[in-house]
Image 1 (cartoon, rainbow, N blue to C red):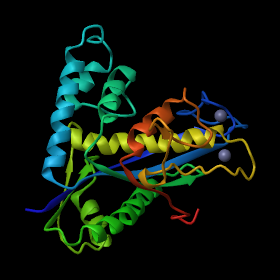
Image 2: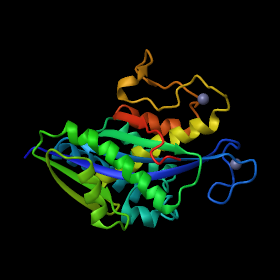
Image 3: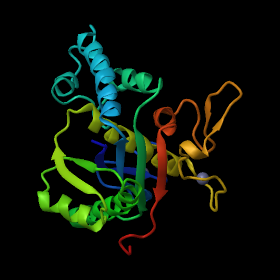
Image 4: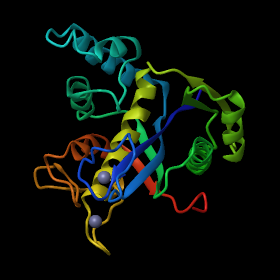
Length: 272
Ligand SMILES: [Zn+2]
Ligand SMILES: [Zn+2]
């Protein structure tokens, strides 16, 4: 059967425009702090079961190598990694680097991200409304693109939401094809790609916002995607902007950019 697999995740990255690597993030801002919240949703799309299975098998090998490596068996992250696999916001370089290095050799998914930048902190209700609106916006495009397929298999990363939440998002996305929808816990490598590509994109946006101190800056702050990339003579990916080679957000995003089909900043979805 002709099935497309959509693995979805949601995330927020908080950043301070005043202070590089602001020490107050995660707590409360000082009077000088000028914070932004980058709120986003992302999807890893696998256009066949083969694509999904290939990725899982490759990452199973990488995961086994990390688990068997000596020197990091006592790392605080190890127990969580053993149980649930990769998690972008928690993984130190010893977990993230082998994954990124494997994906640098090519990946079998297409990534899409929708995000918005808020200058106010959203309470839980507004944040969920923002996520839902972003999911609907993203899925409308994908439902249209895959409308002739026999089945669209949609999996959200489980976060205690009731099934009615996901059913409502799918209904608003106006599917033309047969859709199955479910939520799954962390652990599957197919789903971990949604987590990672979303985090890489939001971190890229956050670091660019953090670095930019220019009023009316002419540099595009929107991350490039696979169609808007330029390459060096040696074939390396070139990304214009405020970030430099030593920036980990840039390093992460470079891994995913060749697989990113669309990255779109949404306007004021909530009328803020
Ligand atoms: Zn600050
Ligand atoms: Zn700028």
